[in-house]
Length: 449
Image (tube, rainbow, N blue to C red):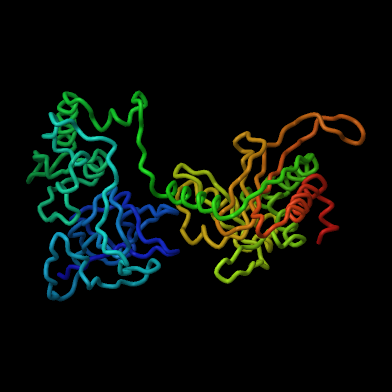
């Protein structure tokens, strides 16, 4: 058998590190080519890693919760074939072995070498057991030096996949448990008894990791990482590099709401049923043709303004992991049905945490629907590199002037933030007015195209 090591691949778009969220396999498991072996979280998405080889998992170099640089080894496999000379064992502070077998390129940049020599960093712990409870063998409270990422795992105790999963969820090292099953198998009963004993011991300490994170505590500390970290950096960069201004427009959207009902009834399939956001997105694409300045970026090194002849529409989506902005490519070329299906697909994928990193790049202008949260308006911050972002407020049934009388109408507010280096106030106002005109009178689009 030949041992082959697998390094964290370059997942694309300039990402240099990822956090290993969970292992789908354990030492001793037999895997097939392209079988999902782990989940990693980049600054943009949760990504599944497929196995680059068919064989047996012989070693896991990284624990869940550790941030790993691209090119750092994370797992080793025993694969069929003749033996190959093994490289000299690295010292504790040595770099990743220079030779890591390059498998088939199932992912972008599989096997890329790291640009940084930094060692993996363990994520911050919520809290630690008090000194009186340090004898509890719980991996969640072990110091980084106690559990080195490259520690040998050849003697890992035998257990079933459900037991291994439960142990990972509780941060327990199964090597700390004496198995009572056949040939030393660690059973579920063994693990539960260990957890019960650990809970009892921890309760005698002054502080436990669990109590520090409970709602009754006075403080809860959450590590800044992943999507939250990337969003924070992007918003700070945007706010302090582009002079931003916002204009507002409140319109009678009753004709559009009536149109949406008719279009939804006539849709070929549920996923192609357009909603209000779809119609406004289409109105935005049409308005861009009349005011191309809003669909542009500032190229500072070249001292040029780059105007795009296409619309890659970013759709801001709130997810459990934070704000992400996947992109509908060439949105201006799509009909309402295709645009509705694309927006729905992007939103569902984002909420599931499965948006690919490449799907969140290349946007030229963004739309965000704050109305779904019951908000009337706001001043959205630009996506870095873009000239404008449109916020769609909530639709309110309220009194409104209609044909010389007061009537109950569907009213909403649109807010457009723009980069004042690229877009003048007059251009921003004209662009927003065009969108509002379509929303209040969809037939007016015939005079714009």
